[in-house]
Amino acid sequence: MVIKKPFSKFEDFRRKMSNKVFFEETTPGTFVRNKNFHIKTGFWTDEIYNEIDTFCYNIRDGIANLIDGQIKVFKQNLCKQEFNELQKIIVNKNEVHVINDTDKNLGAAIADKEDVIKECKRQSLDVNTYFKLSAEQMEMLIAKIKTDLEEVVAKHKIRKICDKKEASFILSKLYKFHIPHFYIIWKILKNPIVGRPIVAGYDWILTPASIFV
Picture 1 (cartoon, rainbow, N blue to C red):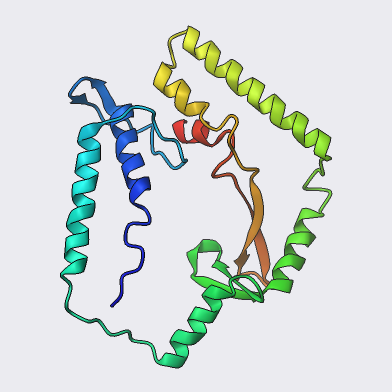
Picture 2: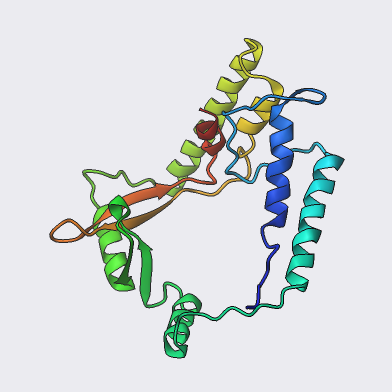
């Protein structure tokens, strides 16, 4: 078995460990679990913790030694044709077919890309549900969200309800963010089958505030 890119998530692991210390160290050497901070964004504290770095690098080196010393060969349970077809789906992801989760966690579903686009358009063009914004209106809405968020955080800092660390986290996506995107997962128990609309805002301005709340 060939292990490819075993440390592709190493920096993210180090980031999470540093954030845990940053948010949970109340006094030097005293740590209190803070359930408010389940860091799912790309936030990385500016504080440098040598102990955390040493711990992470030791784990990385230990895993590397285990991989280097691995002798046992594991066989896959797929035939060559099945394996090749799965590789084609990975390489040609979303070009002809789209594989996604289903509503109610009923497993994966595969659909023609044309059908997915057709269902997305049917829902997003529903004027009774969605209001279409111009580019100018969108920029105005983003500016208002930023201003409102800064005002709320500043107000709570003055009242000492929100400390410096919390404010830094809540405002961490103020200028570096991605617009939430629209997609669907299939409701396969419906007849006819329709899509469940989802707007994913995992890297949006308000994502840290949502995590904190």
